[in-house]
Each structure stands twice: as C-alpha cells, then as structure tokens.
Image (tube, rainbow, N blue to C red; front, side, top):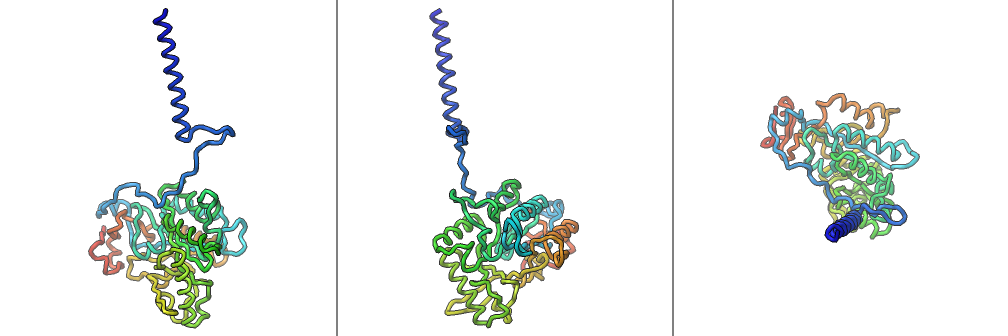
Length: 358
C-alpha cells in the first residue's frame, strides 16, 4: 500500500506541475487573460518592409508564356484625394469606397508599387500579377495618422491599405504621397518628421506637390521654381530624400514645360525623373519607347457618372479586366522584361540585352 500510495502522490504532483507550466507558457505567449477578460496579446508593430514570399525567380520564355507575361502593357496609376466619411467634392472617396476598390485590385491580381519604383523600373512583383500605383495628393490628414500605439488609424488611407494587405497577402502595402507645406495636416515640425519617417521606414514614398498647391500655369517661370524649391527644402528638413517624382497640382502644367522637372531658385536646383498629370487613363509601360516620362497620366478614383463614364477607375478597371492582353503582367523576374514576340519592337532600346520573347 505504501508503494501504491507513493506512486499516486507522485503522479498527482507531476500532473499539477504540468498544468502550472502549461498555464505559465500560455500566458507568456499572450494566450491568457487578465482579470477583466481582455487578452494580453498586444498589437505588433507593422513590418518595416514586406519580405519576399519566395526566392527570386529567373524568367524563361517558357515561364513567361505560362503566365502570359506582358511587361510592355498598361499600368494603372490611381489618383486619390481626401478620404472622408461623407464626400464633399466629387473627387473625395469614403473609407468604404477606398476599401472596396483596393480589395477589387487585390482580387484581380494587382500589386502596389510606388511612383518612384515605376519610373525607376523597379517592378519586383510575383509572376502573373500586375503593378498598380496608388497615389494620394495634398498630404491630407485622412491619408495618414497614428493612434496612441503608433499604428495607422482606422479608416485612414494607410490604415485601409494595411487592412487589405492583411486580408490579401500578395497586396503589398505601398503608395506615393505627394504633399504640400503641412504634410498630413501637421504643422509641428517634429510631428512632421515622425510621420515622414514612419512612412519611409514602411516602404511608402513621400514627395513634392509644390509648397502651396499652386496652379503652375498661372505663375511666372521664377515662381514655378520657387514653389517647387520651397517644398523640396521643407521635405529635406523633415527627413524625406530628394523627390524623384512630382505631381502637378490640378494637373496644370507650367507655360515652360521643362520647369516642372528641372529648374533653380534662390541658389537651389531641382530635378525630377518624372512628372505626373491629373488624368485620365493608364500609362504605358516604363519599358516602352513611348513612356511619357514628363507627362504620366493618372486615373481618378471614382464611379462611372458624367466624365467618369470613360475616365475614372471603375471604367478602366473594367476595361483592363476585359482586355487582359493589354495590361502589364509580370514575369516575376525584375532583371528581365518579358513580352509577346509581336511587342518586342515597342520596347525601349536600352532593354535589348534583357528581353525575353515568346
């Protein structure tokens, strides 16, 4: 009996110790609960940059043909302004409308890249997917703000982008923000620095949209350059690198067109690799001979009423879906350009050594 009792006691002790250890382990991993019933799990910081889901691929004619790659195709560059609970202007979008459109893009195989990446031909997306450039003008507070945990607020543009990215893993959280003198409605310099740093650290682009959202067509050449330089100086003060892209306020081009991308004011020079308009169709591929580097069109996010029957996102996303051979489809290899053989002649000559045809 003594031996049996000892065994029973030892077994009970082992079970109790095991249960305690399991409880402690569960709480350490965030699976326990506090006295008020709330989970101890804390929101995790968003990743600084998306990690590749697979090793880099080397495209071949066979693999390009399999995914119907066409890197000479059209790329939608979408233009957004304010994201408001209730629209005031026709170009405003509600959080629900933005969320719906981004989810449509994700389901259709579109992967966001920045405007700078488009222009630099740094289009590194999975084979069979399509690039899309999400652009937000004016640096409105609805584009980006953080909560007390340092996370993007719900129903801001960045918050919605991350929400959709969490639901659709291939939907890379990336966008371009062209800002004016009070980025994201912030006037405090330190707050501006924090906002810009957060966005840059997380793979977004912050670039020049003039200092006071001026209509450049109405200004002298000198004033055009002043507007651009003053904003470029501000961006430098708050930690943004020199802008490589520039969006024209109102889509209005200066009388001397070159002033939109090259100029000088008060001893400071500027140069942009590309200039973006305000409408109204997809752009041709940056690999194409006809790529309009200093007049890249964008598509306004909107429905199909009025002028938008032909010139806004609902129309163009429908059209691209109905004409899949016309849109840019990636071969999955950022170092090569794959196109159907009949489109070879449309490519810029500097791609001659890296083109795959099928």
